[in-house]
Length: 154
Image (cartoon, rainbow, N blue to C red):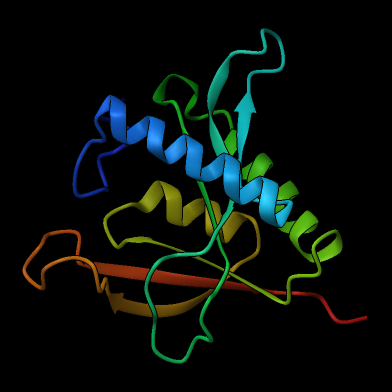
């Protein structure tokens, strides 16, 4: 519901859409053992957002579908504290070690430099850009950057 957090998304979610999203996240975690995990501020236990994995509902060229995306949404009140980086790094490691994921992707609008910086800080490699298949070609958020992390080989 924070417009600042949703700046690089096509729209805000209504309260009902947010509730539906939470139910879907919970079902995914129950079914797969992983998903978008609640992130809390350690000192107070306050909910500050989520970090984790999802399976995007679209295909991208040259990527086997379904693919795994790592993503994050942190309340703007907590930005600038490296929380997305810390949580995403831990999730990335768990994805490889605990859930035996071979490749993990992340993407965002080419305008979302803070999120792209998180991708770089957690060691993901830039793969290029793509037109988001769920957005109109002339939408200002259509062009996205794609990053990938591969499971380290022993």
